[in-house]
Image (cartoon, rainbow, N blue to C red; front, side, top):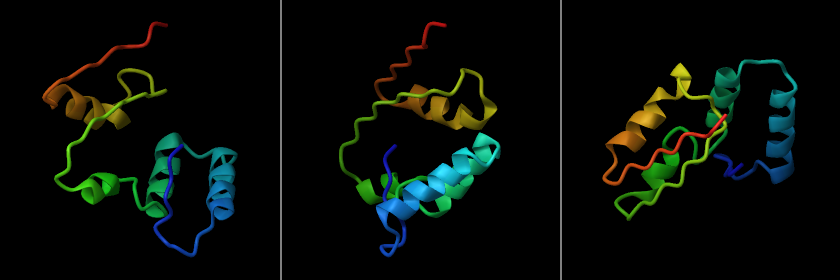
Length: 91
């Protein structure tokens, strides 16, 4: 997992502890990801903003099952890119 806290005062240990609590909380993954986004300087599109107009190369590896409605935006983005490469995982 890649992470950069939005608040410089947050330590790596605090972020790791926060993520551990989330994983064991029983919350739905969508809720966990929303909470993670609020403490992150790169999630929720912030990494793209930081990258600005630089050249981008995206390597997408996902453990989300195909057809998950919560991730449909991601597949749309990849499919609309200049050189789309979507290789579904074999079950």
